[in-house]
Amino acid sequence: MRKIVPLVGAALIQLIAGAAMAQGSGEADPAQGKAPPVAKTTPAERSEARTDRRASGGQAARGPQMGEAQANPLTAPSQPRAERQAATAKRRAANAAANKEGKFSRGGNADAPERQKP
Image (cartoon, rainbow, N blue to C red; front, top):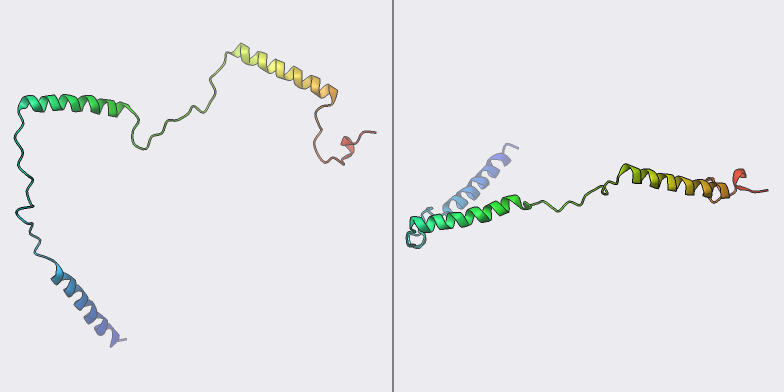
């Protein structure tokens, strides 16, 4: 083990030194280091551009944001209480009539004694 550690260390030093020597000096090319010259804008041009940005920025802030989706309402629109009560009474009456006629099964297995008619 004592012989392996120095050999691996020497190999790592050579790898790191090779990568360090391959790097450049870090200086930018003066011709490409600067943006192309642009004519200066007047205060009137800047204020006009600012008003345009404010209008479009306000619309973007009030509109849907990134990652937002149009959420569909999870509930149905509510109905007046009287309409709900009338619908419930109608449904209960229909169920009671169907139950008297024997249209509802009693559940369970088809071979169960309560499902077999004499």
